[in-house]
Length: 187
Image (cartoon, rainbow, N blue to C red; front, side, top):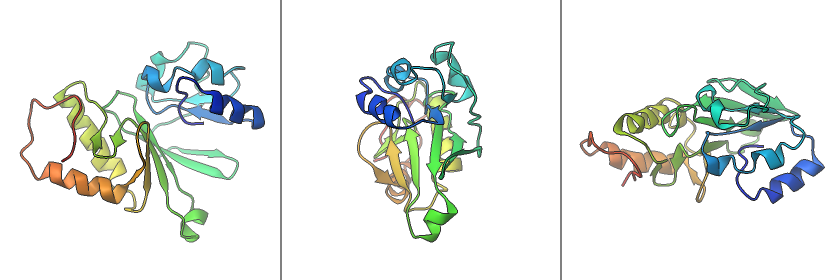
């Protein structure tokens, strides 16, 4: 499971049919955590969240999943790679779903970006330094992924790395405003 938003009825129903290995959280904001206690009813799945965002979860949560950069996370035949992408929050983390078998079969990779990247721009930044950190995270980890990788943001429609990089190129072509922060769009 990735993130536990409010009204997690679908997640609770899915959990009743499976035995999740872990719950991964993209970042420590309430809109991604409101359903955590309802989903994590028995405190049995281990939890993965960026170390700098751990204080946003209940103290009873078991932090058994290392989500440091390039950590490989396996559950059955699913394999995810964690990527620390600080900026939106200090512990923001993205998760890449990509296996050699899926790539060999011509399937596209998927990246769960939480609020690090939306179609058209990054998640809200609290300061210009945070915006710079988001941009660095994107350039280091996310924009290096295959152009066909599907971006699954925490809010809004899906997009692709190719489309996101094209939007970002417009932003990068302009002088950087050293006072810019908050809701930023690439175009």
